[in-house]
Length: 166
Image (tube, rainbow, N blue to C red):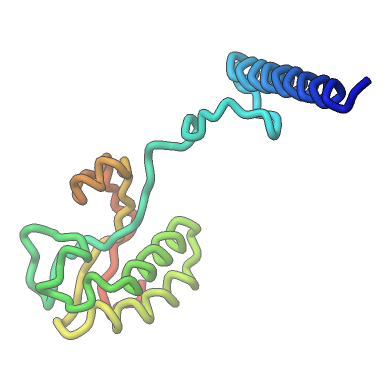
């Protein structure tokens, strides 16, 4: 047997092995897709990458009710109240509000008091007493990307007044 005929046989064997491998891979991946509730078998995947990603997300914000004893008509979210608070768009304010929201939903009164102790002097000061509510907002990320006020639900979860322990 010559060297070239061995090379040709090895080449044909490799091609057949690859073809069989591809058929087996596709059969396993597609077969798992038709069985409801089945997890994928690594590394056999049907590549439906986003079929189990939820379409809804949530975050927390403050809705400003009154500042310095004066009721606010429009009741803006904190990030929309730059005319009232110079830190309204700061990332640290957003993270503090998220932390406060999680603490309230866990019913962790000590953590709520701790977060309020640094949130209020840093981000709600300079205008007198501020009455606000903490809200949980649910939204579709794509819709909110187009319109930052496109919320599916806005649910108040707590009411506070700056400088007052509750």
